[in-house]
Structure formats: structure tokens, C-alpha cells
Image (tube, rainbow, N blue to C red; front, side, top):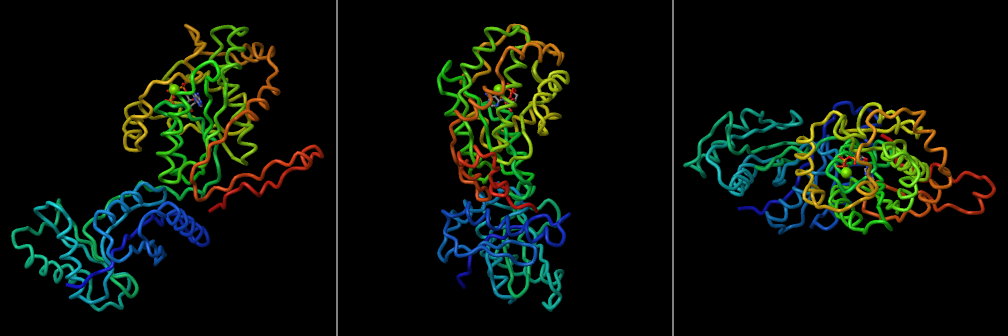
Length: 424
Ligand code: ATP
Ligand code: MG
């Protein structure tokens, strides 16, 4: 039997993608895949009529092809991934590739063939292809059943331009838009369960995500920072996170806890966090803040308190989990691979200096009165300057230009275009 070239066919949703947007989207996804799959034996990645085609090197094993497929499934913008072979537009060769594919499909009892042709210049229509290839498969696998609904395996055959693609493994990807097609956001990242999921959801809508973690250091250990780094490495696999700023927050939290009314402390910490995140967003040219809040989940997540924390900043604060149930969030964290990390205990700033009865309906006037005692502007600059940067591989991210002290002193704005990512 012929030795066929292994390929992976990547489908994306074209809905809503028109004109120029579409080619920007495709190029972005292609570039992201090229960077993320660097360690796999790939000859080339290119685009053919509404699909991205990954060519694997000759002799690549099924196991490696499957690993590569798994890696692609989690990449934002990918709607479906099919792993199989490229063959000439020749029914006999297509039949052989179908036999090979089905033979690699693992244990199964029933199957069907699902063929399509992109151009009618291929003389055999899809019904006929289904029948002919189905017949070949029945001869080679006589003990297996053909089943039109609820079958164990579907052998896909796609005739596209001047070649055919045949596969028995085809799975839904996570969908969304390629990272880098929706601008940049700054995402508040604790080591808890919720915030990594919130960040990931924004990345799935195409945002480049910059994490900010407030560590209780020097009042606590740096344990939460290690967990956040582990979480970022999981997110990095699919190109979802560009960097994490770690802000040593402990001393400021202590200062607030010494003089502010206990019930308001949590809100004051959070307003300071938001302000620092907003300053970092300004430096990164990011367009929004993101949190993992979910309505009513804890005392600080009531409508009144959300209003009080929002009032500290002018950037929009996006809360992708606001209407999600904790169990849904846990499921998603498990799928994402962050749940086990997030379930480990590490004191971050929020577990320190916690009041016994936090305010659940804060009044903005009371909050602002309590804040008047603090040199907030100075603190925000100090904290943003003290933040330690950890970089992760995010193919569509370009860091902002280093700030030039001289230009700053003269009041000259740095080049705002620098840190921006291309818009779809
Ligand atoms: P999570 O599971 O994300 O930790 P949570 O259920 O513990 O959330 P809160 O502690 O009220 O809820 O935090 C709400 C949100 O505020 C978090 O999802 C995160 O976006 C942000 N946040 C909280 N603590 C920190 C921190 N130490 N550093 C950065 N962001 C934080
Ligand atoms: Mg938490």
C-alpha cells in the first residue's frame, strides 16, 4: 500500500467573517499555530479554501500526529480538527487512505463514510463517493457494521482543490477567535479557580491577555506566585497569555488594614488592585480589565460592591463569569487543566488582614471617605513600578516599548501604536 502524507486539517467558523477581516483572521490563526506547534515535526502550514492545512513530516507516527492534534484542539479560533492523510484525487488511493485511517481508529463496531467535494470539477458526487469508499471498507472490515446514525467512527473524505483529505479522527475545537484579533486586556489573576477561567474565556474571544497577580509578599510567602506561574504555563500552551505582572502587595494591605474601618477593607484592597491593574493596562495599551467575579459568590461580589470597585477605574471591567455557576466554572477549569493547581492552598494577599464581617453593600461615599487618608496616586505608581514581569510565549503579543525617561520628562507620549496587536 502507498505511504500517504499525514496531515491535520484545521477548520474554523467563517460565520461573520467577511472581506478583509477574514484574511486577517486566517493569517492570525496560521501564525499562532506556526508558533505554538514549533516543537512538532511539521513541514509547512498553509491555507486552502477556508481551512488551514498542517503537513507532517514523512514518517511521523500516529501517536505524534495525535499529540499535535490534541495541541491544536485547544487553540482559540479552531472550530474542528481532523487528523488523517492527503492523497491524490483518485478513488482507488482515497479508498486505500480510508482503510488506513479506519485501521488506526482504535476499537469500534460501526462506521460510516462522510464525503464532500468543494468543487464540482471532481466528477464523482459525494453520494457516490460514500458508496464506493464504503464498499472498500466493508471488504476490508467485514465484521464491522455500516451505521448512518450514532456510528462509532466517521471516515471523512474531503475533495478540496486538486487533492483529497481522508481521516477517521475529527473533533470539535474550542472555537472562538484567534488570540490577537480582539486587542489586549489586563486580567486579574489570583491563584484561585475562577480567574484563570475568566482569562481563558477572554483569550477565546481573541484578546491577548496580560495577567496581574497581587501577592501578599512580604507579609506572606511567595507560594501563590508559584501557583500563578504554573497556571500561566498551562494557559501558555494555547497562546492565551503574554505576561504576568506580580505585584508585592502585602505592605500596602497592612497599611490599609491598620487605619480603615474593618468592614470596608476588602473593598479598599480591591479598589487599589483595580487602580494598579488600570495603570499597568495603560502601560500595555490594554483596553479593559478582566476579573473572575461571579454575582453573589462571595461578599465582595454583590451588585453594590461591584459598583463600588468599578468606580475606582475608568476602563471597562469585564467579568466573563458573572452569570456562571461555580460548578460550571470548575468543569471548565478541569478541561483547561488549571483546576488541580488552583485547588492547592496558598495565601495570597486576600487571606491576610481579612475582616470578620465584610461589608456587602458598600456606599461609595463611605468608601471614598475611608480612602482619603491614603496617598493613592503615589501607591499606584509605586506598586506598578515594583511589579515583576514574567513573560510567556504568546505569538501575537508585542511588548510596549521601554519607557524612555527623557521623553517622559519632556511630557512626550511614547509611541502608542507600538504595543498594539493587529485588529481583525
Ligand atoms: P478566584 O477563584 O479567581 O480567586 P474568588 O472566588 O476567590 O476568585 P475573590 O477573592 O473575591 O473571588 O476575587 C475575585 C476576583 O478578583 C478574582 O477572580 C480575580 O480576578 C481578582 N483577584 C482576587 N485576588 C486577587 C489577587 N491576589 N491577585 C489578582 N487578582 C485577584
Ligand atoms: Mg480567590
